[in-house]
Length: 257
Length: 368
Image (cartoon, each protein chain N blue to C red):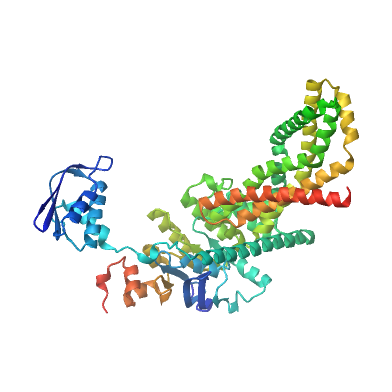
C-alpha cells in the first residue's frame, strides 16, 4: 500500500459536553487517509462520546469536525447525509437490528441506497458475511448467534456500502484473545484491500500496538487530549506519566523524568 | 472479649467469625473506649481465632473507623496475615468525597430544575410530532424510508391478532351494561330498552374506549418496549448513522397501522358488545333475538357509528404516538425500558380519556 498522507478527518478545537457536564475540551487532531487511528484513554474519559461526535450523532458544543476539508456540522442536511453514507460504524454491542435476519440487516442499507434487485442484494449480503467468516448464517437472527459472531456481523453491515471511513467502538471488548486477534487481522486486511480510513476506540493494548499507526490520548482528569501520534512511538518517547502508565499497564516506575 | 491493661485495650478474638453466625457487635468495643478515656491504643490477639471471613473484616473496619475519630492508635500486628492485607487494601484509597451523590439540593433549586426538565420534555414532544408530520409529507412525495413489508406485519400484529382479547372484553362490557341497566329499567317494565342502552353506549363511546384501552396496554406498551430496547442496544444510533431516520422507519408504519386498525377494531368491539347485551336480553329477560336486534337498529343511528369510528381513529394515533415517543425518549438501561413502557400506557390512557371528553363536548356544541 502506498503511503497516503492527505488529511481525511480534521478535528479542530472540539469541545464536548452533556448539558453542563464537560466531557472533553480543545481536541485538535487530524487523521490521514488510510490511517488506523486509535482513540484511547481510561474508562469514562469520553472516548465513545468523541466517536459519537465524529459520526454525527451528537453536536459539538464548540469547534468543528471536517471531512475532506468540509465542516460536517455546518454542512446542510443533504451534504451531511452524504458524509454519513460514507461511514461504516461498528457499535460496541454490534447493534444489529434484532427484528431482522443477518442478510436483511446488511440488505436494508443496500435497499435504501441502491436500485439493485432483491436477488442481487441477497448475493451481496452473502458476500459481505463470507468476508467476515459468517457464510451460511444469512437467515439467522442476531439473538441466535454468539457475541463474537454479532461483532463480525456488525462489521459486515458496516462494510455494506463500501464505506470510505470505518468506525469501531471497542471492537475487542468481550471477545476472547484469539477472536480479538482475528478481528484485528481483519481490520488490517480491510485497510489494505479497501484503502479505508479506520478509526478505532480501544483500550486493549495488544490491539492498539498491533494495528494503530496514529492515535489520540484522552485524559479524564484534565478533560483534554494529552498526547497524539503513533502509539508505538508514544510508548518510547512520551514523557507524560499518565500516557506512559496506560501504555505499559501501570508500571509507573519506568518513567524517567 | 475485651480487656483493658492501662492505656492499651486488647481485644481478644476467638472462635468462628463468619457471616451468618452471631457476631459480637463493634459497639462493645466502642462502649469500652467511651468508658475509659485513658485508652490510647487498641491491639488484637487472635490465637483463638478458628476461621474468619468478611464478617470479621466489617467488625474491624468499624473499630478502625471510630478509633480514627478518637485518634486512637490501632495495632494490627496481632491479626492474621490475610486480614491485615485485606484491611490495608480497603483503606488504601481514601473515600472519594466528590463521588458521593449530593441529594440535599435547595428546595427552590429542585422546583427550578423540574421546570427546566419539563420545558425540555415539551420541546422534545413537539419536535417529535413535527418529525412525524414531516415524515407523512415525505410519504406523499415518495421519499420516506419505510418498508411496506414492515407495515403489513405491523398491521397483522395490531389488527387480527388483537381480536380474541377485544372480543372477550367487549362481550363482557356489553353484559355488564345490560345487567346494570336492567335493574333500573325493570322497575318500569321497560326491559326492551336494554337494547337501546347497550347499543348506543357501545357504539357511541364504550366500544372505542375499550378497544383503545386494550390496545394501549397491549400494543402501545409493546411499541415503547421495542423501541426502548433498540435504544439500549444502540440500534437506533445504527439506523441514524445508516442515514435512515428512525421516525420514518420505525414510527410511521406503527402510526399508520394503528390508525387503520383501530376504527375496524372499534366496529368489531361494537358488534361484540351488542352481542353481550343480546345474551342478557334473550336469556335473562325472555326477549326474542329479532326483537332485540330490531330495537337496537332503530335506536342506533349512523351518526353514532361515525362518532365511534372517528374516536377509534383518534385513539389509534394517540396510542401509537405515545408508545413510540416514550420508546424514543428511553434511557440506556433495563429500568429505563420499564419506565418507558409504564409511561407509554399511562400517557395513552390519559390522552384517550381527554380526547373522549373533547369529542363529547364538541358533539354537544355541534348538536350531533
